[in-house]
Length: 325
Image 1 (cartoon, rainbow, N blue to C red):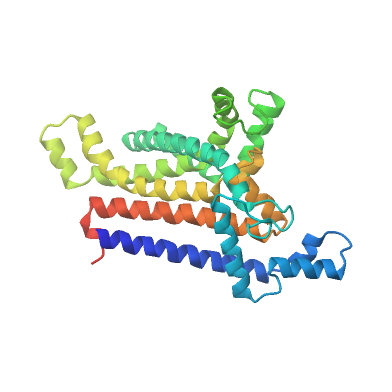
Image 2 (cartoon, rainbow, N blue to C red; image 1 turned 90 degrees about the vertical axis):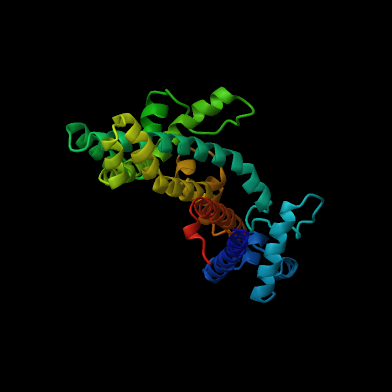
């Protein structure tokens, strides 16, 4: 088990390194203009552009620029005084990228954790009810609603919810984020619509997956044996059918939560103006600002790789057969 964990940790580092190199190559090659000219502002002198290019290392080879940028990112994680050129800063705003990402994490975490609780709970409820009532009118109605939820784009649903419930009727705040430490009630109130908007897609998808798994489990031999022993239907459903059917849901939840936390909530944050990490990424992409894009991409890649490894660790612990020799 220890060797398996070490191999996965080494794989995490290798994936993060590959992602950082790939992102740097892509955005260096994209036609976004000379960063030194963008940072110099309007009507710059050649001397000014030359000084910026030299101080920021834009005149160095590709691998040197990459190494410097990664070193600046690591410096941003360490406390202590740093000069302007020792920290990863935005080309456009000159802000500390790591500081801006850290500042947006509370809003992103609040959005993703709340939405994850909602979609996991209601996804399980929808799946169980649909499986138990398979073939009935309620099952067909749930199926239709689930497909509608899966089909609705997040940005469209967010705009509709904000228009009808925040702008037209003013039942909910019109966007914005209130920190939990400042006012828990307003924190909850401001996040209700974003939570629901982000969770709708996953509720329908999880409900359909769980329904299919439960229907397959109901025909297994161990379920028929449990019924033949005289176990109550509720006990058969909870201990044998639902318990085994939830294993794929756990896998999906770990990967989906990592993807949402790592940037999948970018549209929801933008629509509701939450100013989290996703919102910061959207602003940076719009201006082809390389340092923030690299920082946010590594932030997202870390969570995705981390939760993928956690799921693998749990599987290896629960089932030794999945451990590689």
